[in-house]
Image (cartoon, rainbow, N blue to C red; front, side, top):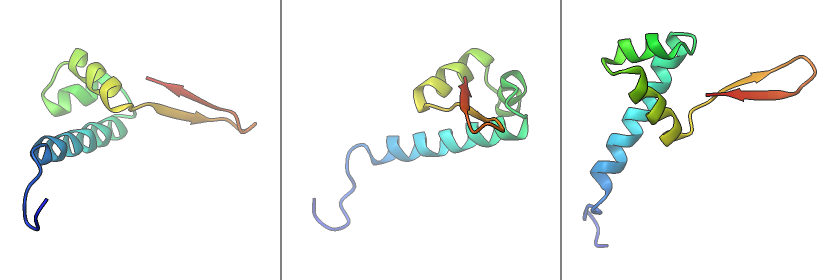
Length: 72
């Protein structure tokens, strides 16, 4: 591509990046309570579940024994 040329998927990629960041922020602010995070974002819990799977967002628990577990 020539300098300054925008690739066809640039807008879609940027929108997805921003969406993922906003969902992650809402999940962290709501202590990973999906219903609260969805309400903060003005979407349904079903949509937040779908988006979490789409972007691979999982809460990681690390226990004292060093074992980590994930939760959707």
